[in-house]
Image 1: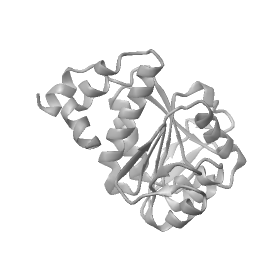
Image 2 (image 1 turned 135 degrees about the vertical axis):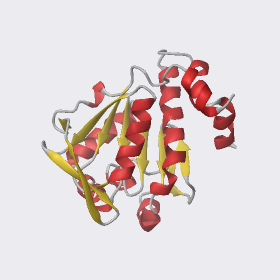
Image 3 (image 1 turned 180 degrees about the vertical axis):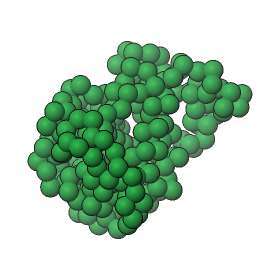
Image 4 (image 1 turned 30 degrees about the vertical axis):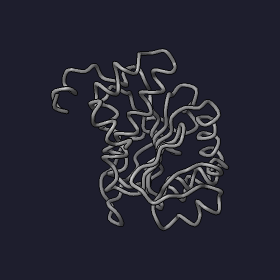
Length: 216
């Protein structure tokens, strides 16, 4: 069965899940908007979380892009009220968040409860500063690979890496692979927590043959 037809027939695999998207201003816009769209199309509720209320600005590499309304401040966001976490990249965004104890505590809570985390580009900086990179197999934007290795990570250069509750990618060109594995990871979490059998979620949504191809 074709991907589009299979996807159209399937129930949305992330119905009932709530995902926090944590960014400061000057995040890489496509790394927020495209995964967010994929999550919403799969049925997840997404909430844009940022350190301050108001608007934040996306970037297209080094050029200012669109503005987005913050839906919840970091101080208001309770990690217990979310099922997963998306961390977009962008050097300025990630460099700001990694210095914030509140942001570090936020991501530590997701890890402590084994909840899915999807991180891309410069976003693994926050994992490193929170002490969560050590012993993890992951990827990131190539320019911070030494930082990741110095933090104890097993850094690899590939489009997407899945390690337990963590999925990571390098850059905007990896977003299609990133989205696929992010949805698969959240679907496994949903099945594990008893919300729906896995066979009725991710394989229907992406097509069993597509999923197996990505994992080959």
